[in-house]
Structure formats: C-alpha cells, structure tokens
Length: 141
Image (cartoon, rainbow, N blue to C red):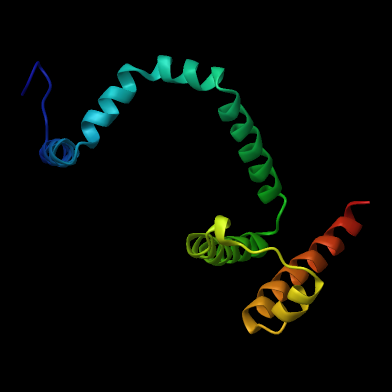
C-alpha cells in the first residue's frame, strides 16, 4: 500500500514495464528529446506558424491527405506500393545524376537517346502516367 492505495500484481507489473520503457528512452536519448519538446512546445508552434514555408507544406499535405481519402481502398494500397517504388527509383536517379553534368540535347540527340532501353523504359512509365492522368481528368468534368 502506498499513499493509501493498494496495488495488485498487474499494477506492479505495469509499473515495472513503464520503468523499463523509461530506462530505454533515457538510454537512447529519446526521453531527453521528448522532455525538451514538451518544455518548448509553445515556442516551436509559434515559430512554425510564423514560417510561410511550413504553412504551405501543411496545405500541400492536407490536399494530399484529402485526395488519398477519395481513393478506393485497393487503389490506396496500390498507390502506397507504387509510390515507394517510384520514389526509390527517382531518389536513386537523382543521387546518380549531377545536374551540372547534364548536356544539352537537340532533336538528333533525342532520337539517339531513344535507342537506349533505359530511356525507353523511363519514357514508357511517364507515358503510362500521362495516359492514366488524362483518363482521370476526363472524369472530373
């Protein structure tokens, strides 16, 4: 009994588990970050509200969430998987391609590039997206 409250085995086990979690959070530094976040929450929120780019990001995220809510469940799952694959390939491509090393291409250079199977695959993907986008836009009328 502590402070007039009697604890049973379940209560004691719950407190032991909570203490173990607190130890792990302290060991990894997460507890300190949470404490700092709690202590400076109001100042951080004021700073975020004053930052126009944060406001714009919030608007964009809100629009994306609303658009994803309009999808059927199976399309949402497909969107997740396709976005992960596409984002991986885009990030990988960006990591391997230096903008400063990109060479200008004219019509002959474009025709030559079209013989590259990787260029063909990339353009095929973009054309498939354009086709599906056009079909969706027709439905919005």
